Image (cartoon, rainbow, N blue to C red):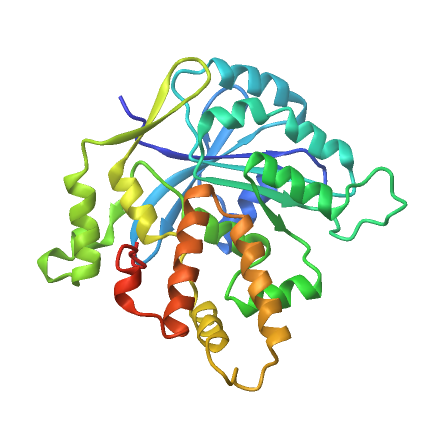
Length: 318
């Protein structure tokens, strides 16, 4: 039977920010609800995700003690019941061993096929070149690409904050919350379902797609031969909440690139922003990265005055 509870596994490998502190940051000023004991070593706190597309309650799960991380991993590897739709790892870029410790969990992480995988840097981003105990930005990004994690700076420098702001993206825990809103969850309630037949055609068609494909499923093995089911209704909601969708600023940028007069900006400045879009795409999962690339190509083709019938095989609304 499919697990009916969406879960986020949060593991910390640094004393800079514990997993419980990370959960408190996600909950914000709401305060923590009563905990749910998941196992001898794992506690969970319910958290409500509510946006214009859907509403759901997920469990934010954390290890009670860093000293018991090995025991938790061994237990999870043998579990036939627990699946995590999102995995958040906390490390410190100034401490190389913290990322090494996180790496020891990759064999378990890969069994989960989580829709959201975040690596949170609780240390300084700019590690001195002569600091043998730390990691360079290049090393961290290579790790993220290898294991399909998105890097989130919890202490972003001013340049990072400005770059993110240009495309409406978030940094720090606001980005964590934004990413979790884009996750695949097993117990969602689509907003369009409660609005009935008066719903707009775009939202209504998405709901119909979810219902018509309800028998289809996507599974992930937990490494012990057991499967966690994810229905097409979740996929449809992920389609609605897809983080790969172009922002208004990105669409405007592509339109300006296609014009003879880029509204006062030099082409060097425009292409610098285009590189930022490429960097953003590199952090997306494979499916979303492909969708993002298609949307960029379609938007740029239209900005250049290309004929609609030449790209009729592509659907920029997906």
